[in-house]
Length: 215
Image (tube, rainbow, N blue to C red; front, side, top):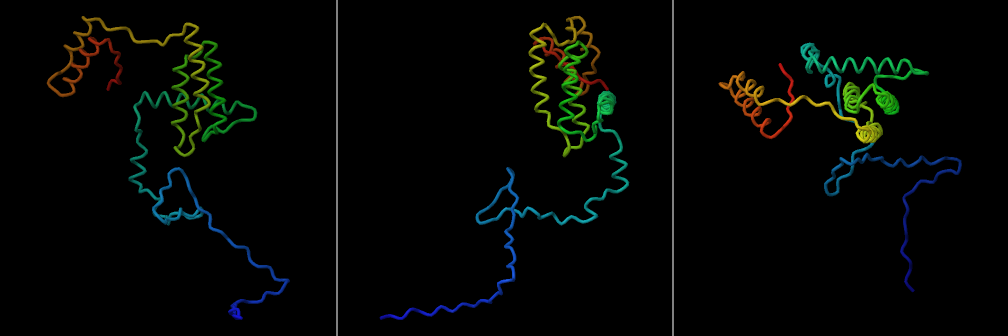
């Protein structure tokens, strides 16, 4: 009869009244952007980049450069007008709503408010779309509201508006005589001038619409 091998345990006896510590399992952070190689584990959920104070600092020269407007004057004026109206609407609600940064619910409610005004004749769909785009662009990138629900209602209203005879206002067509005057006024000694003259002739021949900001 073969004897069973001895099993030696290296352990510590714990009294009954002592509570063993909980086992802490690592938590990993996985998103749709995670890419892992063979045998590689995802990053820990509580891991943070080793940023230091200097990594968040800009010089005064940098701040001065950032203070200069990077949008055209007409674009800035339109954005300020849309933002002021949005801020006034938020302040007038009961209770007041936070305009900056606003929640998706606030953004959607304001969009529906503009659509209702549009149905009364105050706005057209393109105007409401432009206003809401300016308000969203005004927000910092990581706090911009989700426009999905608003855009869905806007698309529905646009279809109803078009079915009821609504038309987008278009610029008047340029006649051949006026188009020749435009081409004649272009300085075609420069590359930009040659481009502009060609586009004017091409747009007229193909019945294209063209709109550009004028410096």
